[in-house]
Image 1: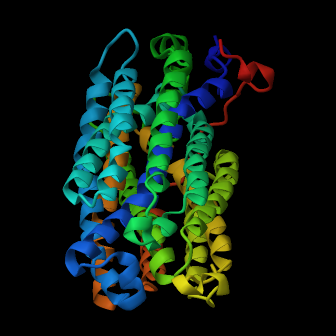
Image 2 (image 1 turned 30 degrees about the vertical axis):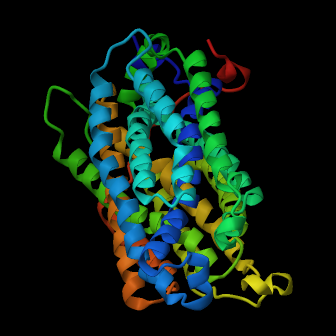
Image 3 (image 1 turned 180 degrees about the horizontal axis):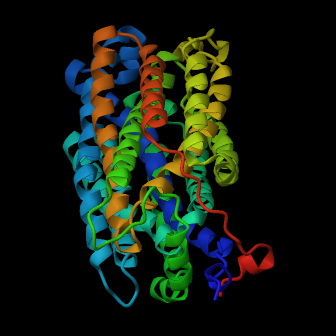
Length: 481
């Protein structure tokens, strides 16, 4: 019998992949709120503790002191990521070995979601009361339980998706994640953090900062419940067994994976090269993500809602990138798709280096608010598209190098690289700000790291294209059975 004839047609079930995406929806929803608000919370609290003035008062009288506290902000943000660096591999390994009636990933997803959702709204409550100890403790609790959630949630897609189809599936998952981020972004447009920060203490309205965290928690719980009631993990794994085995045969790897033998030298070299390049591009991207809110408020002297519009511009471009990245990878390979994405991101950062504060808006002159430089919207769209190509293909490349029994473990490797980068970069960049006294070093810093990641990736990673597969299309692909 001809093996090719007997092999099952590989099938990407778009409906099911979309539903699995609800896990990533909750992750990016929380992360967008966390990264958009928490660095500014910390800046304001440290300004009060060190100088006896709010960050708005320092911005008006001695803006250099705002830069002087960024290294402290960086340390707190990095401590969270350091905890993630430890916890993600642990929960990945645990979930690989877990057997329950609801699956091996679902118990971690549900527990992590519900505890995080309960704790998350208390972060702004402690900030509102100028309690830095309580705020940092709550940030740590949220992060710990989100790590319990994150690795198993991300591993769920490759658990039930054959290897050659994972780039396309990852695009759908990431689009769902960006929809979650969009919810947080819209909240930031209407509930302006800068209005709260710039207001006198007696004029600070409580719900301006509490509502985004509360709404995010509610939506996280809803997304987890949708996932739980629509994705029957054990049942789907049984249905997909033959397709998963065929996916192993068609994988884009140098040598076949064998759990009974040590990892081959070629596969190990590929894994280390991907993780090394990933470390560098996450250092670059997280630097921008962590400090963009403070960059807009304290350097451009603009309204914080502009940051949210930036996120929308980048998110829309990212959705386009995620939608087409799988198709591009099918034609030119994942290596060159990622390399193109890094090149596009580098172009965006070059443009960002030219940005500087603009003129004062007359209506906001009393607060010293400036118009927002519109070129940044272009920068964010270009960067969002470029990094979508990178993120869409990098995770499938990592889990391509393991069997279905170790997906959680290799997902842990992927996040260990990204989280270690996010541990180092806020501290390092905070010290760079302190030494240079210039916000303009932000895009330069990211640009240098992007170039380094491009060099490592293109030099050390092989372009192994996946075998062409016969994929089910049309209405049959949407069938949930």
